[in-house]
Image (cartoon, rainbow, N blue to C red):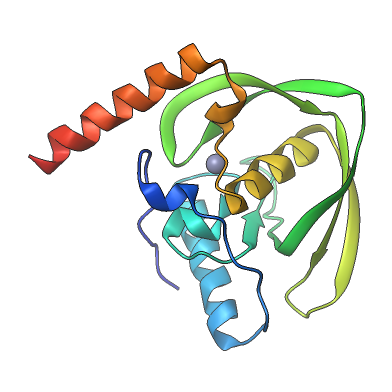
Length: 171
Ligand SMILES: [Zn+2]
């Protein structure tokens, strides 16, 4: 397992649409292991493969609190099949946009179908933090970031700040 580098805004790869996984093989299992290692190291509760530069539709997640036992979850080719009209607001953050937190409104409940690491097709009905986290991570697979759900003014301000920082770091 390897802790991989997390791509940071405004890295263009974060805007790529990721490809579906066709085969669950050793290289995919290695990717998932690296994703967990990277996510726990950060630390974060969710990670999409594109955040470590691999354009595959894979999400890792662990919503356990610090003092609780780990509950690693993998979602391969996840897809929202239903969302509630009821909406909920959570303060979101993202490992690719460090230290920025903002309220985002999304459907309060979603159904998501996905494959597990054994290739079994499953469906989860999610609410609360899991619903938010799944939607945030599935957005990543489509090149969408949580700041895209904010007002243009707020988003532009954040992008500008990170673009400046990237320019400074490159000098
Ligand atoms: Zn994110």
